[in-house]
Image 1 (cartoon, rainbow, N blue to C red):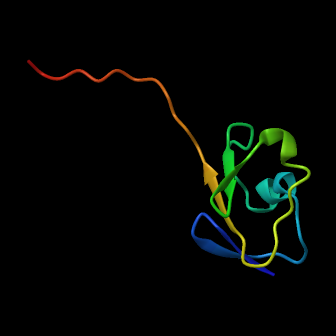
Image 2 (image 1 turned 90 degrees about the horizontal axis):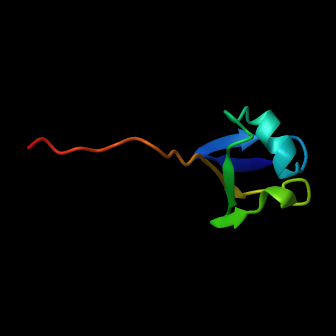
Length: 73
């Protein structure tokens, strides 16, 4: 089955839950990733309950914080 992960086609043999997909898709820093399935955010507590299906679009999102922006005077 073909799903789309971060804009790239990924061919998987069977339906996977989100936790399994993070491993198969080699997500960077899976402990910090936020996941969208077909535009809907998935709660981390549901990663083992939500499965991907043919044609699903999955996005792995990483929100970064911090830093200081200062404008030259």
